[in-house]
Image (cartoon, rainbow, N blue to C red):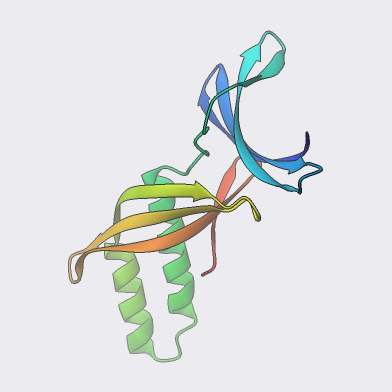
Length: 141
């Protein structure tokens, strides 16, 4: 087994980083999460059982979701619908990100987002994210 590509990394602290890597293996290709620590000028893999994948923080998730909803608002034909989408996007609060799992086939991170809006109360929505280099993006449903 060897690392075919590093899809993206997120710093944990100045000495450690978490990455999603693409593996090339005789048993089949796929994606895994690994942690690395700085050892002088080099990076070393930190051996851990069930390494949790990197994940966006709540502020990043909220910004990504609001941007997506604002984009959808711009696609509405009726001005009333567009206004409702924009109002919903601006009032939406992401309160937690739970049960994040790395899709081993695609490298996407799948999480349950806990959401709150003044008009609709609390709810949850499954969301998919992609980490490329050091940037998170929201993947379409």
